[in-house]
Image (cartoon, rainbow, N blue to C red; front, side, top):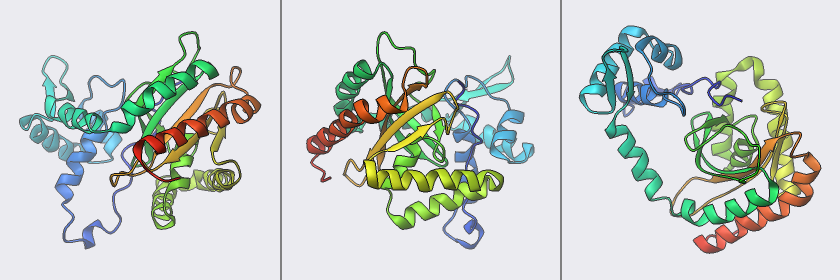
Length: 271
């Protein structure tokens, strides 16, 4: 199962040209860095142009600048780029200040051992959720995803739980970006999202039973960790033949909700 199938980056702000504070060159440079996904070792200008939807000539100038600044390294014999130390330092600094990861990991591992699935903590980025922590059972056959992997917001339990936890204006803004990114798939995606929002009211969690990949089942809960941070999501999922919907809802869901409640208590945030 490949987590690299989702197109990146997300559509830029449609009103960017009308916003005098918006720096287009900076946004394009960040778009280039966002093209690197979990499992990508090297990318060339052509691949970056395809992923970023920018002209190759623009990409060439951006990669040159990013290399000079240390955000990319150029591998001469392959004529391709990899993330440089400056980019890695940014990510490491972000992960290091996330107390929620250290608090969540032992609780996530406990749930992974019980469910024989994979339990992951994710944050939102553009049209994706990015895994920032991951726990597997020692004996489980689980998904080939790890820290840094991206999964789509619209069709996954993790992404849908994040949507449900957002304030209404923020949710509508993100839904509009999802619609603009793929008009053809929007009707089906919208139906799944609306169903999940109702699930969040009824079950306090969101589900994805074959919505993202037909042979993958998962449930997820999101919460706000405080300190001004955006919501984060914790999911439990795995191959459908191992994790049936009934097991996830009846056995895993109460434990997942308890995990999140313990996290809120430890972080000093309210339910």
